[in-house]
Length: 433
Image 1 (cartoon, rainbow, N blue to C red):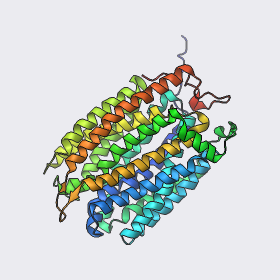
Image 2: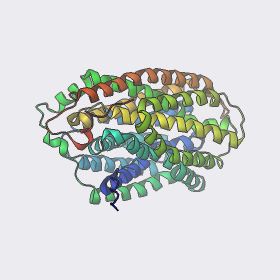
Image 3: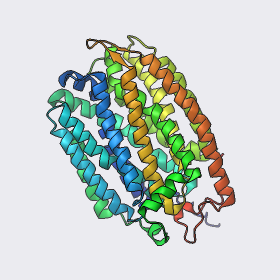
Image 4: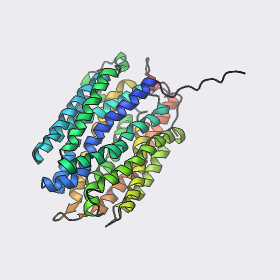
């Protein structure tokens, strides 16, 4: 009787650790941003701010993150990615602590700027690490687990944060994020290995030349345009989600944790499954499917008036499954675009584009949506039509991204180097459906 050959592990134990710690790190980043949406109804009342002022608080993070990401791009490939990650994550924690002690609207606005300056770069460094350490053929799975942080923040973070806010005020969730985030930073400092293979790839370009090259690269420009469209749709609806739920759908503040918790729980399950499906049938196909689902539900959801909680939960679950499918498949697909020596700059600029586009989207949403005397939000349906338009445009744009990745894989030359990193070795053999 012959021994059965052992099935090769998809990920090493260290890679599993990297996926887990980056997912948890993303959890704190996402929660810090997303917690503003469910706190919106509370903040607008307690600080006596208008929808446009609240949109400014959301946009402040986005704009500052975009600017810092662009400034950091030229240096992003010149340092060990672990050290870069710890530096910016420390600054992000400082901004979160400032949010926790902000006494008024002005100080909160300043705190969000500080948080954005550092937080926006953290995400780009994380995705550069993923691209360095994981092959293209499994990045859908990896992105599925890392992007699961969005869902985890809903299931674990947002409901708990809302409970804390209802009990001790809106500052409490930021204290929670700071305590958890500091623990994550310590684990990264102690256990993560240096990520510095890209430093062996010599380049004659200085920081400014590296930035200019990356920004002006025609192949990269297509990805940046696609990122703009993706961010515009996502950032428009999110800031007013809780205010729409309370003032238009008729939910209470006590029901919001139920809504976000159940929605996030389903996304924790579907996130990794979506990533696996993207690797199996094609990342672009999954992106199109997710977009069609999202557009359909947005068209329905933004028309709702007073609606029972179970119906709101059902519609929200389906909508976020579609949105999650778009995020995971798009992230995995675009990770195949940059050459290894450009990954840090590419991810940093991409993050910058995403944040700035999101900032403009939030500001535009604040101008479209109206509220009179703390009543229902008006013109939310118009906002939905704008979002659907951006989703349609993104389907077309992502097709060209898919073609770039296919061409890159077949030619094997666009990103080839004398010392390819592990994450780049399969580009010559893996096509994208």
